[in-house]
Each structure stands twice: as C-alpha cells, then as structure tokens.
Image (tube, rainbow, N blue to C red; front, side, top):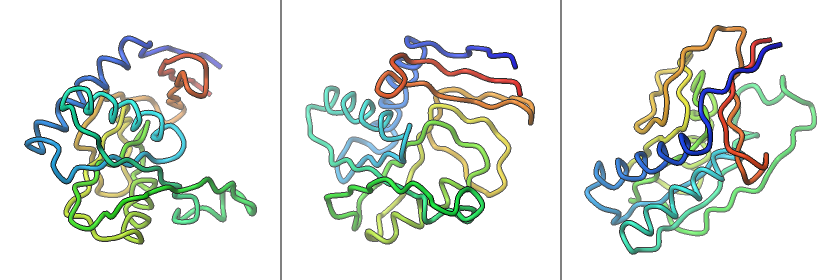
Length: 177
C-alpha cells in the first residue's frame, strides 16, 4: 500500500480562503445565505468556511450539520446497524441559499442523499455544493459549485481528507490499495 500526500495544511487553508471568497462573490453577498456541513469531514470544513465568511463580511451566518446515513440508497449494504450522527439545522431553510459542504465528492450519491435530507427541513431557494476535493467518477449528474482541488485517481486509489479537528493535522492523501 502506498500513500501520496497531495495537499498539506497551508494548501487546504488557501483553498478554503478561495472557496469562501467565491461563495460571497457568486451570491452577491451573504443575505439569505446559510452553510450546512455533511458529517463528518464536511462539518469541520463548513465551520472553517463559515468563520472565514463571517470575518470577511462582518456578519453572523446560520450554519448547521447534516447526517445523511439513513438517506443513502446503499445504507443497508454498508451496515445492518448504521452509525447515525446528529443533524442540527436550527434555522428555517425556506427561501435560503444553502451551501452544502463536504470533504470529497465522488459518485454524487452522498450529495443526492444530502439534498433529500435538506428537503425534509424545508424548501431552500437554491442548494450549492462546496467540496475540498473533486475526485471525478460521478454516477449521478451532480457537480460541485466550489472546488478546492480536482484530482483524477485510479479506481484502485482512495482519497482521504485528514483534518485537524479529528486527525490532529490537515492533509489530503491518496492511498493505493
């Protein structure tokens, strides 16, 4: 098994700075904007993006977390006893522009499940997608609006985002199985 590092802490920070600026620019400010992170890695990245936007714009943004475990179309194949985390969206989504945040987008199935989950909380004006890594390989017609880095690993490689909040350091690694 070989491991290759493709991003380190400062690369991730630069990408999050750029994504935060792009979100504000594309939305012409932050009115009616909210940030929702998908468990697990997306939650930490969403918090970082939220903090950057709040500093840049001198506002407070509504933010939440979303667990999509039971919305997945393959949850019964993953485990008969799935680990369900807590979703926490303590604000109304009606007519909001929601930025969903995840660490890696691959097949698009996680994002489809997240959109289904969001709709159970209300009907936002729009849903945008921000990801740190786009690894291609889509099985559904879902594309991110904001991307930190695009990579093209082989089908036998795995892309992992390591974050300070859960892994004690920031990095993106590609592991060949």
